[in-house]
Length: 118
Image 1 (cartoon, rainbow, N blue to C red):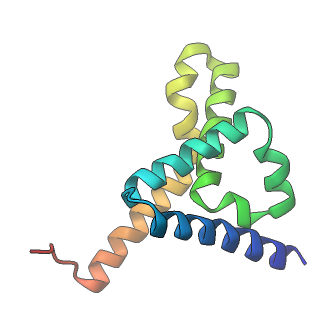
Image 2 (image 1 turned 180 degrees about the vertical axis):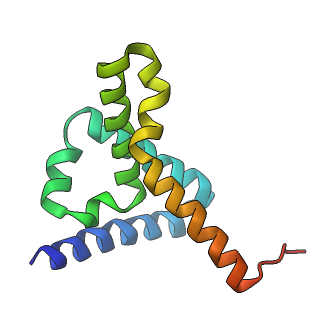
């Protein structure tokens, strides 16, 4: 049942974002930033954590979950190190995800031979 809930929640988030992309003139990059900020805001007000526990990977894998992870890292960083935690906490909490994205993007570029559009 956990897999079904994760699939439905993740798919629902993707469907809502796709509808938003199709019906607005916002560029995809701006929509991505909105999603990350939304995750951080929902984490700050305490709504996202219970939702993520219920939905599992369906809520933590999309960009909204990345924003929540950044917020949690910054919050922990501030608790441990004070003001410098504002800068270090987000990187510490999300380093694995960022590293994986960079490594897999590089490997994909080796396999598929990307080219610039003219």
